[in-house]
Length: 131
Image (cartoon, rainbow, N blue to C red; front, side, top):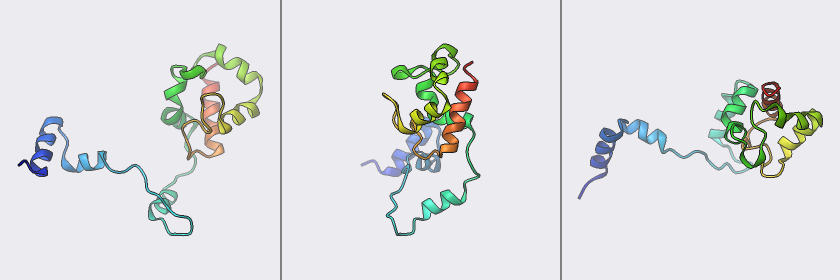
């Protein structure tokens, strides 16, 4: 019978990752914290925050999947014609649509952890680069 160590060793050799890299790659992506109880992970995340992320960073991490190719009618990054009618409705309309969702776009796009300020920065980044 082949043991886990043997499998891990052959996997390391096959894809060039150490056991530590594999462990990090397959680690859980989150934890559940119950209201009223201490949550070490959440406290650490808040403590390590360096303030709001840039609009470009938010776009690159959360918005590009849809806005780079126009998924489900999303205005493409850099497409002035697609953005012009949306911009003409005013920034408050853009913010409302981004925060509340519109058509296939869920509320806050795919960034459930984004602050309103970060959403605003992402919108500004997309519209400024789509003139």
